Image (cartoon, rainbow, N blue to C red; front, side, top):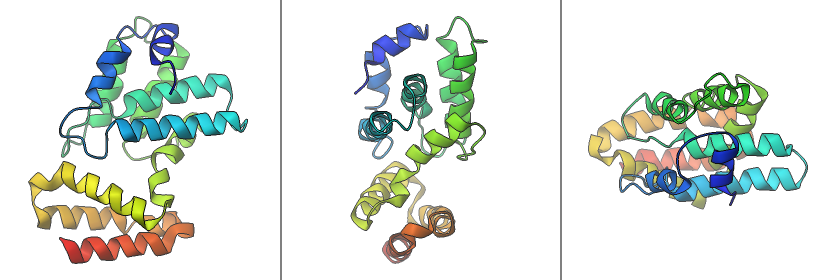
Amino acid sequence: MPDIQYLLDKYKIHTSAMDLLKRWEEPHRAYHSKEHLYDLFRQIEDDYQKGVISNLEKEKLELIALFHDIIYEPGRTDNEERSANLLMSFCDNQNDSSILEIYEAILATANHANISPLSAIFNKYDMNIVERGFDELLEWEHGIYQEYKSIGDDGYKKGRLQFLKSLPDKYPDNRANLEKLIDWVNSNY
């Protein structure tokens, strides 16, 4: 795990690592939790160790990971914007090019738009779950369901299937597992 406080201090983001990490432990988080954050940190570190990303990219990607879901309320459509704005509220120099790049990449996670090379790298990490085996996909599904169960099975199923059905064409290498997950959601809610 990165030295989060060091990164915050280096980029002049005036908050504590402890306060930010507490947000990732909020009781309504089942998938968008510390485990998701740590998985992102692991992917970033793996690519850094392989020489795929530079140290500067690694630092920025770790800050994007830390802040991209820092505000997460299921059912809201502005979590990414609120998360990006929270980052900016901690920064003295909001015009710093690195901070702006991080801010824009956080905003891009709303629809996983690849608006920059950095956002494309981060979106790959954030969506890596859909390229995993069925057991991990099912664990992901259970977490998302826990976060959204308050809308009821019918509403959840409709929205979730709409999203899931968009994935097999985007991730053809994992089509079989994704289609199996779609079938599971269709028959279990």
